Length: 169
Image: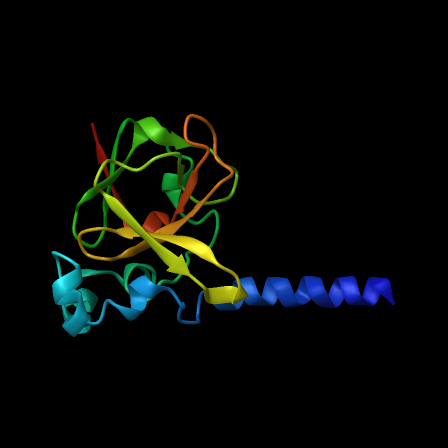
């Protein structure tokens, strides 16, 4: 009986994570990023149609609909080149290669953002509370931050590679 329960719980957890890519999130940033309310909240605002014109379908899904790219799908995850990572939606610098580390999670990870690059909000999707990381200028969803990163911050900013543009230098 215990084995059956374990298998059912495991299958449900895997299904929830997989389906999270296709379900809208419950974060406060998304509910506040409609074109009418975003005017007072973010410096860069566009209609859904304007975002769709400038972003790839995968970027739109992640940045504007709070999706998650598949783990290990971004070449930025293993990249070690010096430079900075900008928001793919508005080109605001959000992370530096100096704070990037290999977390083994399958997504680019950083222990700190660039000053004034990101903002956070509460994300209550997937029946849990997480801290969402989004671009402070356009509100684009970048990923989440967790308390299991390296020093000096102890933070792990787990970021979707498709939400970033790398600028070498």
